Structures are given as C-alpha cells and as structure tokens.
Length: 220
Ligand code: C5J
Image 1 (cartoon, rainbow, N blue to C red):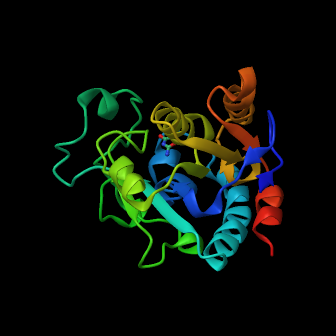
Image 2 (image 1 turned 30 degrees about the vertical axis):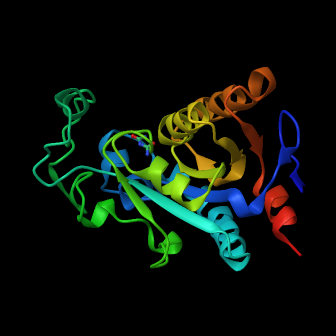
C-alpha cells in the first residue's frame, strides 16, 4: 500500500505506522498562552484543527496507533533551561501566570491539548520539555515496544516542534510522513521552507503529503 507524497510514494505499512500529533495545545492555539506571549497570531494555526480531526477519526476508525505530545515544564521549572526561559525576552515568559494559568507548565489549562483533538484514554500522551519529542522522553522506547517503524507526524509548529521531531525520528530510523495541511506555523514562509526541507534531496528527512492522500489509503 502506498500514499501519494513528495518526493515519491510513501510505502505505507499501517500495522507498523503510528499517527503522532505534536503539541496541539491551548498554549499554542488559543489566545493567552505561550504562542501569544511570544507575539504570534495564534489564529494562523487553527486551520490545522479540522484536517487533524478528520485524520484522527479515520486513524482511530482503522484501529491504528495514535500518540500525542505536549511541550511543557514541571511546576518547579527544574527541567527548564535558563536560556529557554529568557531568550524571547517577552513580558510574559514560561512559568509566569497568564490568562490560561502558568505559561507552558504541566497541569495548567494552557498546557492541555485542545478539546477538539482530546486524546482517548488508551492513547499515550508524551510530555516533553524540549522541541523534539524524542529528547528527554520515553517516546522511542514506547514506539519500539509497540513495533512502530513509520510515523505520520502532524501538529504545531511546522518548523519548530514538528521539524525537530521529524529530524530526531529520522535519525533513529523511523520513516516520517508529514501531511502539509495538518501542520501549521505562525510564519507561512517558514512553514513552506520547513516542508520543502523534509522532502528535498530524495526525502532527506522524510515525505510530505496531504491528509486527503492519507485518508484515501485508510478507506476500505
Ligand atoms: C514552539 C512548538 N513553537 N510546539 N513549540 O515553541 O513548536
């Protein structure tokens, strides 16, 4: 079975392929969170919600593996590097109290995955302190235990946490496919460049496709 993609068709093996939804959290998609504190227009990410919802429904319907990630820090900020806290120099920063609770802190309202894409109880949710989902987490061990070798990676933001995760996963031997309509950025030019980087050079980091093509492969 294959999925139409760039730079060439993705050799889809559903039983060993997981859907990995990156950081679809209030802190990035709703006003008053981390994304907004950095001065971004969070409404730009909301076009990703409907295609992610459709893909999630189909993926779950096919009985395939789903995992979610959340970026965030321990309440005592012991896993927050000083550089990450201070670099953006915005008025509100990680750990400060905002309209959705403390910014990018685990357990706060802003840290939660948006209700439209809420994980089901059986779906692993990987909490990560960094941009990549394979650093300082048990994601690699979890994927190995589940027998996963391919990832369809969606979520936000394209050039930050999605890209870092795809790079980390690629280095560990996973084949990654990114449906372009299911990932989003506050910066359209960086989104486009990030996608181009993935499929360039014969798929140096993976494949880029569209959710319609993934849905077509999932339909009976
Ligand atoms: C960012 C992310 N953009 N989830 N995090 O800081 O991409």
